[in-house]
Length: 156
Image (tube, rainbow, N blue to C red):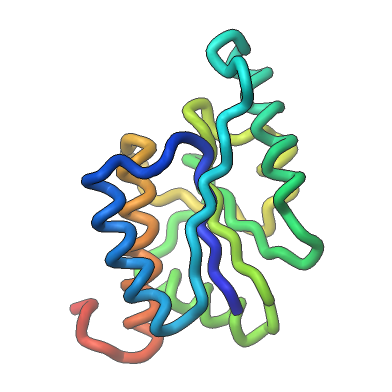
């Protein structure tokens, strides 16, 4: 199984890039993994929040392939404990999923069309985090889940 982490927006800020690169390197010992930064639609500043989400949805749908398992990060999604996340990932790997996609939406979240298409909606927390920081939290939590699945001592 391959893990992809998708985010709509700009490239990682330097302080985030260092952390995400480190966790991606660590995750790659367990699964092939990559970041995909999806571009913000042209004239995004001129669009309403609803229109921007719809344009972003078009981009997301153009990137999704048949058979991708989409996990949309959304504030209304299910919250997982670290052990539950580890089991969730392991279950996807065991079921033969070829590509597990974790999607971070744009500044205004994800369009309803994407949320409905998602196989799973996941909320990292009831707290609100800056978009860039969510990238680092996601990468760290995926690494933590990998170590839990292998009974390694990172998580204690």
